[in-house]
Length: 565
Image (cartoon, rainbow, N blue to C red):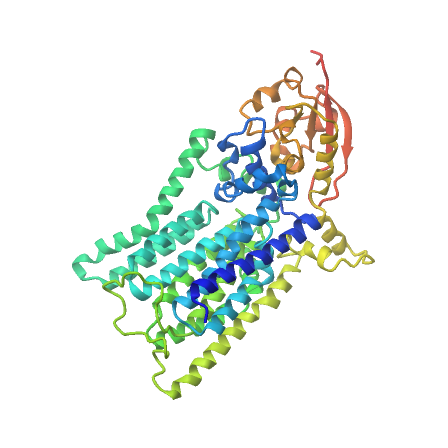
């Protein structure tokens, strides 16, 4: 029989290959790309290949990890252009992280020495869930965030079993890295540190209770605190804004306001939307949690169950509150942690037979010996049917998340970013319905921008000839084989060139309508009438209708050599 380590390696390789294949099929072959993923590729490209390459070009709207880890693959774009043009470097990033998340789900079961077939089944159901397949292949931040939270939860479950302090240190590092991936990791860090502190307090002698609670809780919170502080200080020193995601003209709050996003006007309907999205992805999550809680209480093994409830649950609650309060979008992907949460609950429904991950059992580890030959609460044959009933029920309940997730992804109200997959997976060329037309527009997003990049590349322009903001222009820049042609906001001389394009040898301006998100475009801020009239500094060279959904109609202006006073 293969060891758990070798089996983990096989799981990692198989799932990574599958995700990479899906990423190639959707992204490179069909051009189905998501904006946030492509913008991260653009940020990595700016670090290496812009007119002014420097690490700060990574940007401070998103946390940096997802773009930074793409630098090696983006560096290969000179050899294979789809790395940037179709965002395949992002697909590689998400595939490697989501494969790691599958290994962590397998690890939760193997750490507890559960039946191998059961653990592999749970891992497969999680790894090949349609939502996991999609976000394991599209370059978004969901994959690394799921990996880091699963890694943290796995270590915290092990700590609850054997009291090994190494697990707390690993969990703290995992959550800190999670913060450098997504801001909502703050909720997971807070929940995990409070729970660890509370458990330690109940275990310790009265005179040492709070001291030990602070020490153990600090192992969770301090790595995240330093990640939070380091990123905020770095952003403030370079941009003057500690939290650009919330205060910048390019940040989330500004995007919501500019785009007129459909956010709830009342708190309760927003919560209902969030709950519905969660249930659509994992309809058996609540039954799994209840059954796992009852089983854990009966066998005196309920403490490990608290960690997936608190860590995953805190992020889901944070997302629900954010949407209900009108501070984020109504995207199905924000509730994707319901899937690893359900998988973890399915594993914890069964009793442990061992704790195989421990390096040093702590003072407060359970005293009973866990035998790999039998479940602790089943010392005789009469207990076996209960175990196998739990195993079957757990597997079946989790398996229901696969069809439910597929159905959720086809719902345009709850899945505005995913349901466009229907244009690829079920094209129906003779269907002329409005929904099918919208699917095709979503699938064609950024095809126009790739055409613009090809057109500009064909002009064989010198370096610094095209001025563009990256509000929308990132999709043009990232598709270009000559990114140095563009002057973009991360260039340190961007403002000077923006103020006098002609004097700085700029030949073309990329203009978008001065409405919606276009209001934050630096060219529109400096020249409010640019899109309509050329603002007396340029003349219209080309108008480009857009095939994509919610994408602007472009106008390419040629800069006048001399500007009249």
